[in-house]
Image: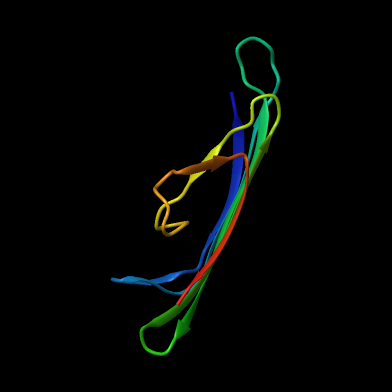
Length: 106
């Protein structure tokens, strides 16, 4: 029975083709207390931060950092891969409970 809290900040300016400038951030924490019985005990921190810098009329320089850590008796897992996170790898090809990804796009 997890309990969670998250902080979300969004300042991104979007155009029909995608983000143009600004930033996005989400920091979340989930806690599942060890209450006995069939409940699974774990703690999870999930951070996703993105920054968009406008270059010229339609150019954008994008930075992204993603972190995920879960621990406890039964840690949660994060599945990742595919064009949104790791180009050249299949969607959900990787999984882990300690993950750090960083990428940039021009």
